[in-house]
Image 1 (cartoon, rainbow, N blue to C red):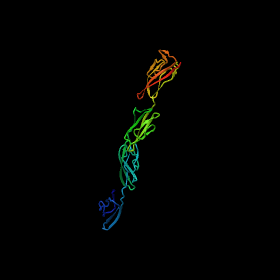
Image 2 (tube, rainbow, N blue to C red):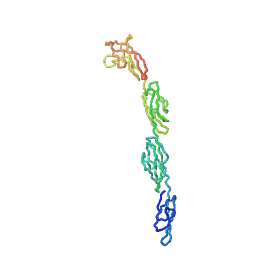
Image 3 (cartoon, rainbow, N blue to C red):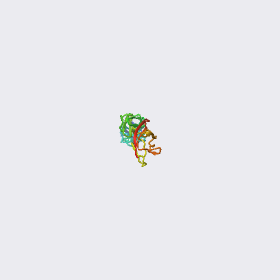
Image 4 (tube, rainbow, N blue to C red):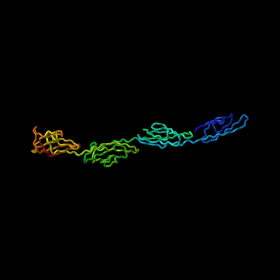
Length: 307
């Protein structure tokens, strides 16, 4: 409520309904529009009267809008109404504290007070509480065997979070792309999966996981070689194709005699026996390999030595 001073030039008089009705300039604070009558007496005792009306304007119905909440790193817009000019306090996180609808980007819960002034200069205030929800922590993993998927096998993806809505992309090879722990199988190539998680507050976060598509271990046994020192097919050794390692191979002649053995493809046979060129003809190769799952596989075949 605003108090106004009422003045009237006079040497004497009476002013009712004021702070002191017997002075020339009392203060008045009516609760509603009021007309005051001033009565004065001159030096001869003759009375005179005058009136003044004090208009009481209602306070503006200032609103700061409903309480709001949003996700950290997000943006909301405050909405004040009911006045002509506005001033928000505190100013932290606001794009402009002197407009009705500033953008807000605070990191912690904050209560804002807006002070509104109407066209008559009357002032009122209101408050709004802004709550900040933190993003869900999302960690995507794959198991077992780390993140390798072999042909004919499966791996289960999973995400550790408090989310309620899940979306995996791409959906290739997934049993269900809208659950937290889909099974992946049969992917043709190494795939990067992105999981997007939404929590109960509508806050969204994501993580990625790489799933390696690993082919079945295959040991290639060449059918011929020509150890003539021309730099082409001068050594014979099994070739690893897929996921795994060659652990041993042996070469036998047509009479079953062991003439060469090695532990890797780097230990190729140069086509000699005890330092002398071996005979042209057919030989037997036996190989063993171990897969990435530590399973041993055996292979056997024939090849021809050509000069």
